Image (cartoon, rainbow, N blue to C red; front, top):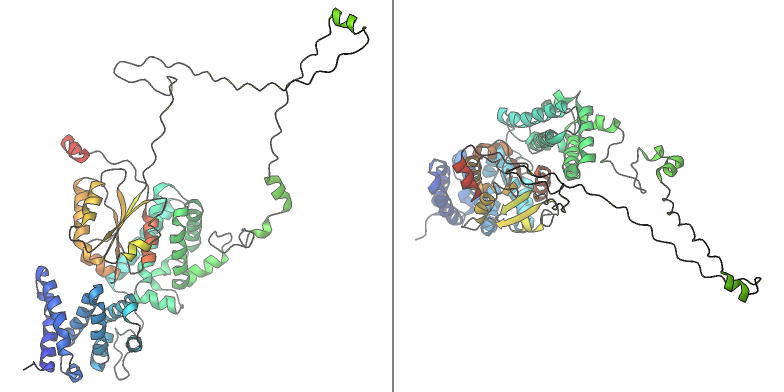
Amino acid sequence: MPPDPAKKLADLVQQAGRLHSLPEHSRAEHERELFGEVRLGLLQPDALEGSFEEHDMAAMLRLMVSCGSKKRLASRAVENLKQFLNSRSWLKVAHGSPELLLELKGFLLENPEVTKDADMTAVASLLEAPPSDSRCRPDSPTSPAKLDDDTRRMILEPLQRGRELMASCRWHVVGDESGQALSLFCRGVTRLAGTAVGREAMEAPGAELPVLDWLASDWPNIIKFLANVYESRRLNRSQIEACVEKLRSLSPNFSEAEASAEGLPWRPKCADGAPEDTKDDLSPVEVEEAEEPPPPPPPLPPPAEEEKPGLLKRILWGGKAEEPAAPPAPPAPVPAPTVVVPKAAPAAAGYPSDPAGSGAPARAPKAAAKPGVVWVDVNPKAWQKTTLNGHTGLSFQGFDGTQETKPWLSYVQQRAASDERVAVLILNRRHKNDAVAIKQFCASKRVPPPQFIVCGKGAPEEVCREWGMQDIHVTKDWDEATRIALSEVRTPGPLPLPRDPRHRAATDM
């Protein structure tokens, strides 16, 4: 006799609520088993109206999102969610937690290929507004969203540090500090745009956000800094354009300061290529002066002196007739200047002589190593379709994130102490242990680790806490991950020397 669907579902929901108490090494196996049995509990639609604990119901919905992140289980997870969210009690639980609601929306947006039908469109619309008979709680998405302390800190820290570095550079481009200032500031803006507060502000711009209010007097200088970096570093232009676009919606003060600024390089240009606000400043006189005349041709050598006819010729010709004119001789070629290379002084004992001073041809300089970017993703389309693949300014390598051998670990570690080090590493959230292992390996070799970019669902502050790292980027958008990677790559500088000679030998092997 098959089990009662109502009892089966009640038992499964309770098991979902207890998953968080299981050890991490066995939790994944229990999640897979539980996910496979959920369909048996949903055979009877009335079973969803039973009495369940809200935290158990929320855990079950999170289980659908977690297992549905695997492509082969996505369609089944969507079918289960369709039944869960068509129940008013389960929909109220989803709206009772802003974090859970965000996870559900993100899952549906990440799987458009399995959410095309009209039923899922209706379910997605249910997530946009709470049930009609539900009460609006203070933390409900219908009330103005607020930043908690951890989220506020994670936004303010990079903004403040980036602003300090900009001011130390006097709002100009000065060495690596300018790139670090830009990276930190854009990171804070991206994190703010990814929160519920940021999304509300971008959808319906209004008053200045409190988290940005302290920058009101600095916006003109920050805009000046962004313009200077935009003009001097082509690699950062897409990052600056994305940051400016977000700030226009997030901060009315920034939008006003940008509108009053003149000559900003990211503004649209006219048909002739000149910016709109500088086109009228060009006069014909300036254009004529800008064009230099071509250099004059080299002067021809003087013609050779004509030889006088001898006595015999004058007698034969009667002394009156003239000889026929000989064809003019071609101009003599201009001799090339001779360069005298001084001989090098004898080398001191034990030291080689300078090849540049010895007269020998100098060796061609070694080509600068390109910064490396590695993308590890369970969906190969992520690193196959990105513009990083084939970019001439960097060395790119993509890996299938489902491989058990994890070849990307050896790829990054073998290059960690060389000029071809991996500067940026893009991973999925499931690759947390790999990121920790790479960071520990780089620390043991006394070399900087790659800049990590987590490409997947989840709030940035949540992923940072889970990974135990603060200096990482989190995004669900492949294009955004590409823009961040392009802004983070840097040409590697000289590596620090190890303290122990034995460590030097181990590193060079």
